[in-house]
Amino acid sequence: MASVTPAMSPMRTRALGGLRSVANNAVSIVVFLAAWQVAAMLVNSPFFPAPHRIVNAFIRLARDGDTMGNSLWQHCWASLYRVLVGFAAGVVLGVPMGLLMGLMPRFYASTRSVLEPFRFIPPIAWIPLAIIFFSGLTRFAFLIFIGSFFPVFTSTLVGVARVEPIHRKVALVYGASKRYVLTHIVLPTVLPDILGGMRVGLGAAWLTIVAAELSGGTSVGLGRMMVNYAELLAIPEIVVGMILIGALGFAMNEVLLVAERRLFRWRWQVTL
Amino acid sequence: MDAGTAARGGDAKVRVDISHRYGNLLVYEKLDLGVRENEFVCICGPSGCGKTTLLDLFAGIMKPSSGHVLIDGVPADPKRQNISFVFQEASILPWLNVRDNVATGLRIKKRPAAEVARKVEETIALVGLQGFEGYYAHQLSGGMKQRVAIARAFATDADLILMDEPFVSLDQPTREKMQREVLDIWARRRRTVVFVTHNLEEAVFLGDRVVILSGKPTRIVADLEVKLPRPRDPVSEEFTRLRARCAAMLHAVHAEPRE
Ligand SMILES: Nc1ncnc2c1ncn2[C@@H]1O[C@H](COP(=O)(O)OP(=O)(O)OP(=O)(O)O)[C@@H](O)[C@H]1O
Ligand SMILES: [Mg+2]
Image (cartoon, rainbow over all chains, first blue to last red; front, side, top):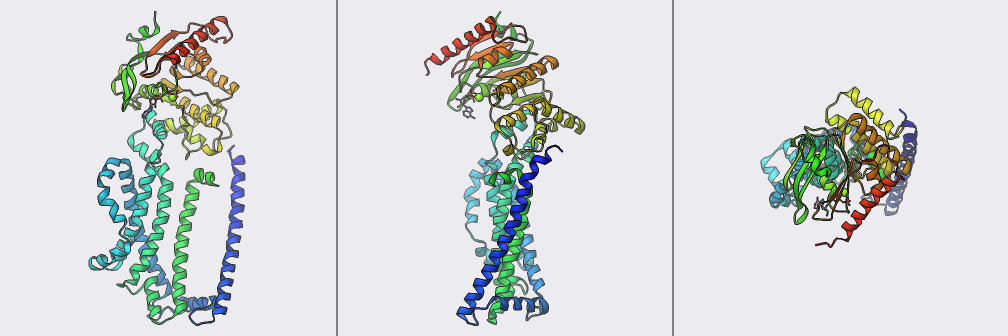
């Protein structure tokens, strides 16, 4: 491939930049932990645990499980599974709905007074109804679906408006069908917005899962675990739960970011 | 005989007889224009008079407010007719690299992969973009992007080639090369070409006919047949006289009072 040589150098620069960014982040983590340690020493109170106490609590939880005999992994997996199911439902419905409404602006314009107000009802406000109508996985999946649907739907809808008329003309002039225009012109244009909406939706999903688990109806899940330890005033265990939620959300977000960078090389490089 | 009248007969490849408006803006009121099979027609006219609109109508990607556009006697429909179009605006698809951009038309027409590969390689070489096959739009210069669009239009072997100021962003030698290529494709493969340009020298150099349009509501001011033998010599006396005549008519159009 003749094009490899000139295209290589920006890629290599990017790899180096990635390495440097990993190193910088490692330094940031160390600085954060040091600041925490110093603050804990200054405050010197059992209600402000130093980092090593969190680590110890983590090891205890990971090795022995919690007071009810549920392992840390059960808690993580329960929350993660609920998030994945609800989030998947949000994406599976949000993307086609966004495309449909985006491509039929008149339909959207005449239904938005019904649709849009739902966006302003926070997922947490659905918890009472969810408690009545659903139980188990469906309850959590439903709440997460509510939380992740609108970010995905709205950004897809907005993305459709970004399709350039000239790109549509290019396809049409060579005899493209509507279906081709949808899959080869609209989708590639909207995909970055969809991924962006998914990242926002994922944030909303994690926000919702913890609140939903706090409201009861389950014995596992990171939110549940934290409430259990709150009743025992066991602060380090609560913080372990917080950190795990942050880390899991961060990891999923990174997966989406990597996908974005892979998929949108044509776009990513522009923003550099 | 007036060239327009000649094309009004049954031998017209493309026949437009339309009125067109965008909302309240009347662009064409009863425009009647024919292009014969294997004819090279250049269209000139003031900015905003509707040249791009006319090509969109020719291509069947826009419907006129009234009247009809016939290609080979049937309504223009890019699904049935083999049309290609070099757009005035940048039209390269930013999520595809150069190779896939050039292949777009062929892929839509579901040509076999081997033919697509061959045609793409051929036309990329024709526009001098070898070595840039893997590049994306944002890595190309303006003129390179335009050459991608030209390659895409040439790759499909269309019967009707529509070009909307295709060479404005190219340097002089590249522009001349592209002009020769268009003439070559037109002559060798017997294609019909409609070519919009603001450059009268280009119009007289390329066209069998030069059609000059007025300001809105747009009508045909002149429809001149260029009888000079090819290759044409832009400094010959006849050439310069014809060009000056076109220039004078365009100036007259600009001097017209506007509604
Ligand atoms: N989609 C549209 N909606 C409304 N008005 C339009 C639209 N497209 C073009 N017009 C108007 O129609 C007229 C003709 O436009 P067109 O693009 O065909 O001009 P043109 O002859 O190609 O001009 P130029 O030489 O500057 O490219 C212009 O006045 C323009 O404002
Ligand atoms: Mg134009």
